[in-house]
Amino acid sequence: MAALAVLALSGAGAARAAGADGDGGDGPSLSWSAFGTAGYAVSDRAWRYQRFVDDGGTFKRDTVLGAQVDLQLTPQWSATLQPRLAPATRNDTRWDLTAAWAFAAWRPNNDWLLRVGKLRVPFMLRSAQLDVGQTYDEARVPTEVYSLLPASDFTGAHLSRNWSRGGGELALDLYHGDSPLVNRNRVWLREPSLGAAPAVMFSDLEITVTGAVLSWNTPDLSARAGVHHTRVRNADGSGLLVRPRWVDLGGGAGYWQTRGAGLERVSNSNNVALTLGAEAQLGGGWRLAAEWLRIIPRELEMGMSSTSAYLTAYRSWSALTAYATVAAIHPGSGPLKWVQQLETTTVPGSVQDASALNASMRARADIVPLFRQRSLALGASYALSPTSKLKAEWLHTHAQGSQFMDVPAGQGLLQPRRVNVLSVSYSFAF
Image 1: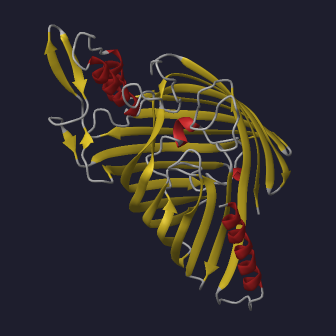
Image 2 (image 1 turned 90 degrees about the horizontal axis):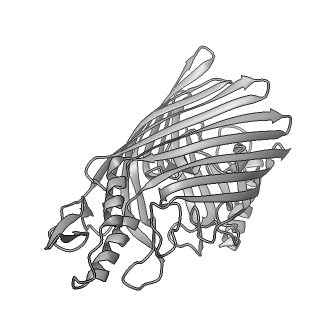
Image 3 (image 1 turned 135 degrees about the vertical axis):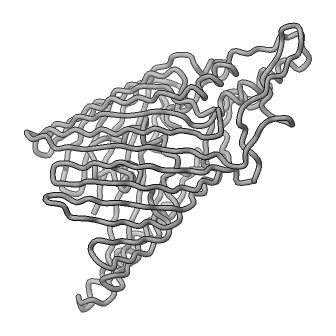
């Protein structure tokens, strides 16, 4: 895969040279750019946090390599391809080379832009440049907001309209498309079945995304607000569980049935996501950024339901920028209630198959998308040049139920946990 990435970069460079030899008029031209981050992270816990980070250290959490090739056919028509090498979304041990962006664009004038193909969902302030670490100062964007987004990329259409207003620009983005997350929905199972060792499960999901985003940009302020709708379904066509069913075994005993016949299921789960964010220059080297995300499930009582936000303060001295971030996620009542029910209900050992029934409830609790945590990050970046940065960060996270943590077998999901993560990275873009 690394060799393929090198070939993609060298091919893009050749394309740029070919374009540069053109006549420089309105004819076709090619240009290219490249970006990447080499990042190392280590924690003080043996279990993994944010999929890869433990006390053994890892380069997988933040490392990425990519390139972008832009073909300008006419002043109105263009095309973009962005190959990207990063840890696989469907396997914890592999790396994948994928096309993060692959779209054609039509710009009839400076106010309108239509793009069709594979694109990035314009959810948050840094959505478009998530992979280009050189464009922001944090070692990584706050997990409490950006890792909860229903989808990052989609294949469809994206229409933008801009208006110049005084010293700023107002923009409206409308988009619609599909985001097939086949084998990308990762769940850590403490006990997949009776007596089995902890394991990772990747479920096959498909998501349709539709949304509208309004942005305001001036030299000192960027603000964005959006309303997004997602429709989630299993790729194999099987239904999604609305809620477990209580089975009374008599004598005061019972259990929550989570699989098999007799359960209420729906073919699609509809969700609404509301986003709000702003970044402001305050003068004197100070800057503030804050974003808020609310996810509301419509049908599933155990579906993703959360409110999350972060606030980051920056202080810059020439090439050095220090920052502090506070972030938090609060779950909705649905997932929290069901995890509590599934974790605390126990079938007495005198009941036939009691161990298997208890294991089934714990496994379903692992699948519920529960996120309840808060974090503090202190870090700094140093611009080695206009196109490269060194970064370092200390992160402290406290949680009482978080799917970002691979909980060891035999431990409760709602048990309080703390983790400290040290990260260093080098990012470039040219």
